Length: 290
Length: 290
Image (cartoon, rainbow over all chains, first blue to last red; front, side):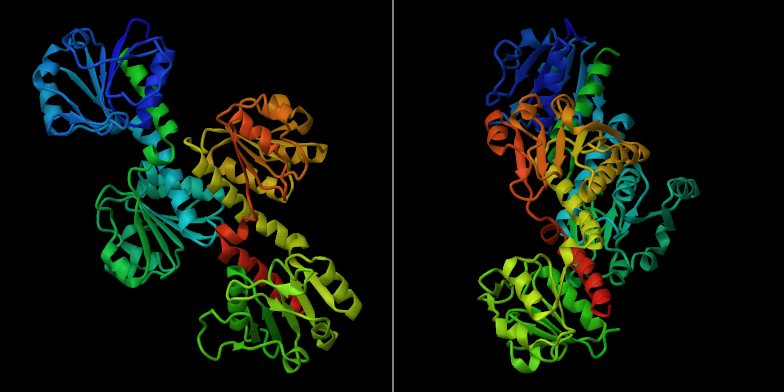
């Protein structure tokens, strides 16, 4: 339980709503800043502005997943305007107050460091990133289903990269009944891929290994689907690239060649905000008592 | 190979295009009636009208999946108007000519019987129906992904019915990582469900077994999701009903209770026309030589 814990939320999206619900269930005292448009049962949470009285008492400050931008604002889906913070706001926080964010830019990092505040970057925690690979993989598979006129079952699926998301995509596609092969570079990865009963290949051989692929999922944030590789792939192949921007695909060449290639934005918050929110909620509730 | 076989197509949708491609690859002589809007490489197939010269020579007449309606027409996605047939057209066909259709209404059944022509109803063949359960299941899962804000992985999924589609949906959802349970009535089905490592329950207990379900797939064309069952389900539950019209859900009550319930149309032709077409193509090519 979080009875007696004082937590403030500074904007966010549907994922943060799930976190708010969760901490309310655990009896935390919740202050909401930047949620004017959010309908909540009365008395459950306190809608307020950032005031010294609130800040001085906080045990946790929860920023949106996108964090605070370098112009000292946070975005909220539930308010007309961004929420503005100042250095003085951080100065007022008790030293034991934990700051939660998804990702952190320079100013946020620097400000917390200067004030001796513990900054927890949720998206960098392995426990969050691994669980986030589930909605990411499902979102990528959903996109593949929508973009193809064939079934995943029975199709030739290639997964590039065997990190947190690559593992999950490979496992789910296998579960649906696809013929999956995974491209990686490390011998230990090859061993694990074999253990999963899935085919593997060395990424250096992508130019010959992807010629029969119907669907390619790329998870590697480096140029892997180069023009050379793309030139040997089937025109009917669909590429779902979930690597962080700008992805690992030569999108210009893919379009020229007539291959459908999509750079998938951060999928968890889009395709399964509730699941993504629960993942954050569980970790926040554990760490706030840590 | 189908060298020397004369086959005529009377309209259809994207699935039939896949069949046309396949029989052309196998060297059949192909007549296309009702495909004015279809772009095909010249000389591959012969676009024509229904003429006695063509009809007298046919080894196979392939109707759209929807068959011939009782007003003697067939629908084509690639023609402005339906294609009209007459009893005389059937009379001109050689006795060995096989008629392929997805489903057959009264007039088509009766006409073929009267003229002693073999009518093959593809959708009634087990080999086609089982393979069609793959695009059906993927389409249903895709809909569930689109309609929920949670992942399939980790969610409580119930599958009502353990026929061709129920089996496939249960297997795929398990493969994605859902907590699956299947409702059935027969002891032999319970045994097979256990063998798959999936939970099961008797459909008569639906009112207590579905209270925690996040997603329910119904495959049974009878009233199973009654108001009594629905009244005990979570409001956040999503129902995908793939049973033939009118489905097995009390849709009026579901809406009243605020439960999202969707009657899914015949999914294979919508979500994976190419896969669905290949399934038909393989069976037609086998049976035309039979």
